Length: 258
Ligand SMILES: Cc1cc2nc3c(=O)[nH]c(=O)nc-3n(C[C@H](O)[C@H](O)[C@H](O)COP(=O)(O)O)c2cc1C
Ligand code: SF4
Ligand code: SF4
Image (cartoon, rainbow, N blue to C red; front, side):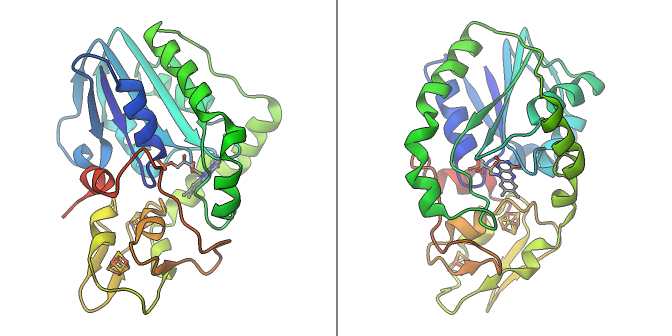
């Protein structure tokens, strides 16, 4: 089994790890580590994709990955992790795969903590986690993958309309200079962790922290700065999130570009 993943705060990596757990020779491949390779051709018995849902759609790097990858497998699946409302993401990812000639037997979603700081207070998100029954839903997804369950992902009219209005996250993804509006407080120690956390190689740390124009708006640097020194002007809380099943070192290993 090969599982491709993209993660900022660890939810998608935690899900990918759980799906691959106990499967002989399971390989987890971080998309930021391979996205610039000239050849993205893969073969395995089972191939999966685990990604966070942004604006009811795909992170722009994950879209680019799908547009460039070719995979051959007996069974393929995709899981979009999300925090509150997935819109028509699962349906649209399956349709996108179809358009691109990529086999995608099952496309589904997994409700986890919502790390979107302009929308949600992290303390409340974490407090409501038990009501999301993540383990139970993840177990169902794992059982589906083991049984090679296929689906035709659907979304009702309201979700399709919402997703169409938001354009499947594309306007969010287009804002590559987003991070240039982030505020770095005096508690920054210039440790350089944010530059390693960034999946887009968009941060450089010298005498100050500088953001370029390739931001994926993943919020990894904001959530994971060890000093909690990076802030959004419109964040709803100072509290931050990292999935406890994933260490900071694992996220750095997944995302590091330098
Ligand atoms: C820019 C951005 C947009 C997001 N959009 C949505 C969304 O449309 N619906 C939703 O339920 N969660 C949304 N989220 C929350 C993430 O999908 C969710 O927290 C995900 O599990 C994070 O995965 P990660 O920890 O692997 O990065 C968004 C998060 C970010 C940073
Ligand atoms: S991770 Fe935080 S403390 Fe370290 S350089 Fe970046 S902003 Fe500063
Ligand atoms: S600058 Fe921050 S928010 Fe933007 S891609 Fe890098 S880690 Fe993510």
